[in-house]
Image 1 (cartoon, rainbow, N blue to C red):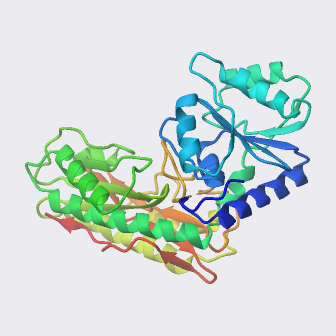
Image 2 (cartoon, one colour):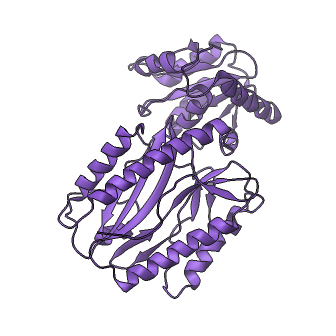
Image 3 (cartoon, rainbow, N blue to C red):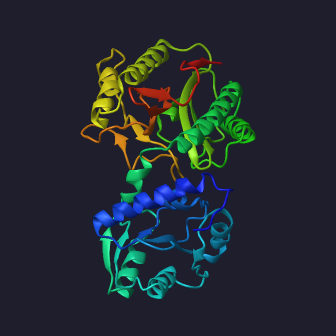
Length: 385
């Protein structure tokens, strides 16, 4: 293992992560782990790139040095910003599965019990079929979620980077709110958010800011267009700051002109749902139990709305196409995963006003020993312009 002092975390943190993975591998009877999930590779090595449209894999044996198999162009980054020493890059005209198979043969892993991530966006069915066919002596074991299970519980180092991401998100949110007014294009608001957040120290976030005015605010994941913000519009902003690939995220909602009574009613319902959840959440509860708090409050309110999605999702290390870890853990009915200290989430109770827009005041939170802490710190009110 190459020792270096310019990584996001001290080497002992990477050693801890590697040893924890190897303990899980041993318990599963896996001799070599192949991870192809970009966030998992970043988590284990410090390497990051937006260039994940090409295959990249990291082979981790129970003993000895891990081996990187990446595109030659991306291998420059592996060498420059990770601790990985042993690398077997492939050229653009080579099939990555050929290089992966050759690497397994080179290290005498071709007949081992190899863990892989079947449920991975970046390891296609065609690639898996070729690898399994070419390496028929090996036993491939689906270990999807093995590394993610460790990622759920954040170290103090990770929490610190999330705090920095949250500070950048707050600065970006304020810039967005300052920019909102009748006659301004949505893309102008987005530009101010990105400029302020980046100038404050945010690295490239895994998702762009969401800027949606009028009824577009009720469209999930609608972001900026050339639409001109109008008097009477609800404006929904969602901003995620990023530091060392760790994110802090929040949503805030505003109104251009005098807010309607319906908007004020929605504001109050969402505010109370958020606060009720924050006051109730604690380790030992299940995701289902926490989800039911805000969901039930919204459903039983006189406003007449409902929680239209999961009410929270795990948040932490991320690369495109998502800044969340919701595929690891989300809050929704029937999910009995138990919450533990230093899990972190984007808590997002929200409602739709039909034909008008969406209303949300979301927070990035950390589960503590006795309750929860909000990592984002920003007024939870309907801003009026």
